[in-house]
Length: 197
Image 1 (cartoon, rainbow, N blue to C red):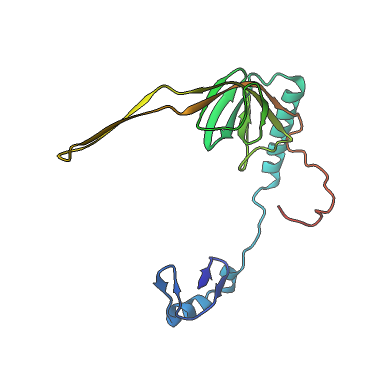
Image 2: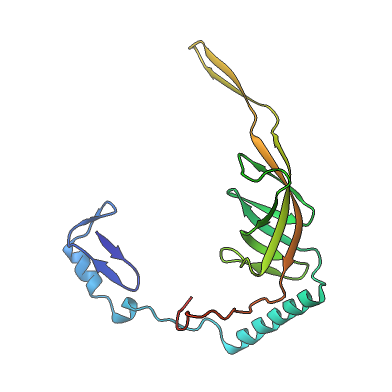
């Protein structure tokens, strides 16, 4: 078994099968002769001073908008039960399948993929921090869907079946979407000095 990357490589056995391929000793020798620059990954700064200044200016404008509460109608993309929904305040969303919350439960949706207003959008990688954004919802209905007819037939076999199916639905009302006006402010956490994230 072998592991091959652009910058470094590790071989466990010469001529072993990896992923259905057989590595010959000539291929391994060629990989060992790579220049030293390709073996090591160089971490370089991806922004210059001008880009850093521009990004700080944009972040301060977003924070000012949030402090003055003139961000407009907020929207969010949330991830619930394997699906993504774009929601705003007072929206109704229907979730198909069995879902645990009961009628009247107040829930906080924590998997927020992005949130935005009229002039800005905050995109999570992969989700926006739960300390920064809060999306609250209420379960307003638990019911069954309309009747779906499932017809199965095999030609020339005298086989036909009709089945009926109703899937459970849960309806949510989005109560509020809030963003704290501390965009790009890092919390002080003890014990993480010298770590790279």
